Length: 456
Image 1 (cartoon, rainbow, N blue to C red):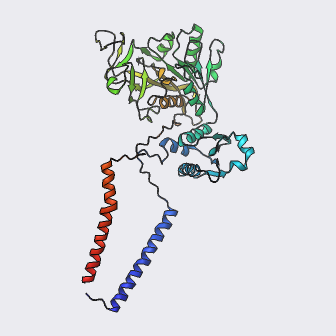
Image 2: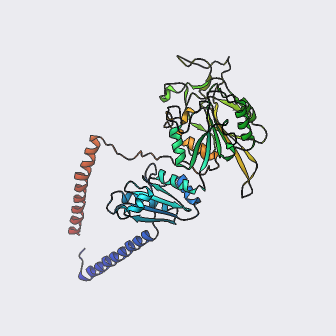
């Protein structure tokens, strides 16, 4: 078909109108994207989005948060810190950020104890803390500590060979004690013989597997503390030597003889049968955030029939392939139904709670008294703290005990999609497609369009 001049002018006007409308649509979309930004995190682990625990914490912060970033103007860390803070500002619009060059403010830097470029000074509710290595875990923990009106005090019973929260031995809890400090929980050892009345000032008491029996006076002090509404974490071991049978009777608890073993541990790559993985968590604020198994070395199992007024929730339970082994753990072991051995699943972690005697919250509701019993204390030790979800489990237990169950530990996000590995054949195919096939296809389609227009 031959095109006359009028037809060409009409087509030219149509093309011009199309370009104007297309430019208008592009401009409107650009304006809308600035005014109403939409963000989507397509990474497999969601590492560019705040965790649910961080989001929940931000919604509970009533007043503004002031963050001062001490970073040089040309620092390569500036963009990463800006992206991190932007993720927080999406959920808290009154998070105010100030950028400061540390070279120009030496007195402030010295006063705040800033030692590196990119450190943050975070202020909330009149309290301030310095963060040297920014990241979601660290920044959320800082906000968590600042949101507490005061630090919680948890006492660790000592004087009987217990595991110590500041100890450096393999069996001690020093690494875990440092993690508690990071979330605003102060830990102290207490000897009930020397300080019989100190329990009244504590937010919680920890009995971490005593190796020798408590005295009668100490047992009476512990019983009185529990009866009057104190929060308690009792970490047991098989054949517990503490002599706290009266406390067990008060809670309706019976310790089962033997060590919990699991026949499936070799299949999971665990060489010792008494190192049991705990993947079956009960529905409870302590265990709800956990996404990986905890590892309990040589745990004890127990049964609880709580007395009137107490409620219970199973936190940790062994697999159905487990049992309480009362014989030697050397060589081949198997369940013997003709003995006192019990088959799994077995309770190795339990929460008990009731209205605290004589206490009422400002809202009018009764404050809860909370107890946690775990049939193992090794899982929080310096040796085993880094296994599975042990650290996260321990922190959640303490937050729940001191009535801060909403303050959850922030688990690190895995990055399964950080690297893409391609074989040589795949790389050759991709290179051939983009360097040969695709250009050749574009040239061929262009020539075909030109040829058809010449014939028309």
